[in-house]
Image 1: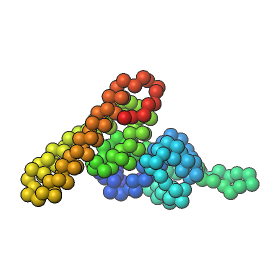
Image 2 (image 1 turned 135 degrees about the vertical axis):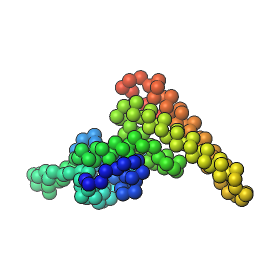
Image 3 (image 1 turned 60 degrees about the vertical axis):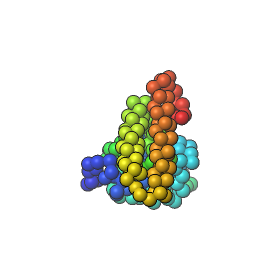
Image 4 (image 1 turned 90 degrees about the horizontal axis):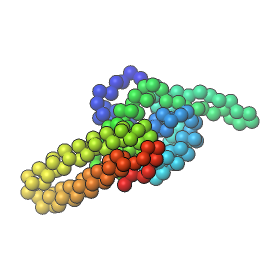
Length: 194
């Protein structure tokens, strides 16, 4: 792949967000499209749902960009299947995505939870750093929103900022609980965050 991503936001401009859970599953081992669909469903449940046809379309783009490659496997009495693997460039891109906090609170419910799932598989330390970085983003966003709320002369706009600040406060409280759970969790145990 010719592109080098110099910042966390660079990869977001050029990639379909659904590429990253696919890269995450492939980082765990090779798979064909149908297996990827089943793995995503098993690993991420309702967080990220992709149909098999969508997965194959995404894989075509990922392969074109050098992030995955495939091997054709012949099968007796069945059509050959393509088994996909992540490339070193794909691993680098996935790592950048997985370890970068989301910039919008609305992306917590889908993208951040997928990142946290894969970060937790990597190590508690990687997951803890992701949470810490996300908390920093929440604090900066809250500070910016508070300033905008205070400078606004439009009542409905101030109410919207109050609502968003309440969401940020709740999100930050959940992140702190998730961070604390990582610190006390016995090694080898994969408890649910929350």
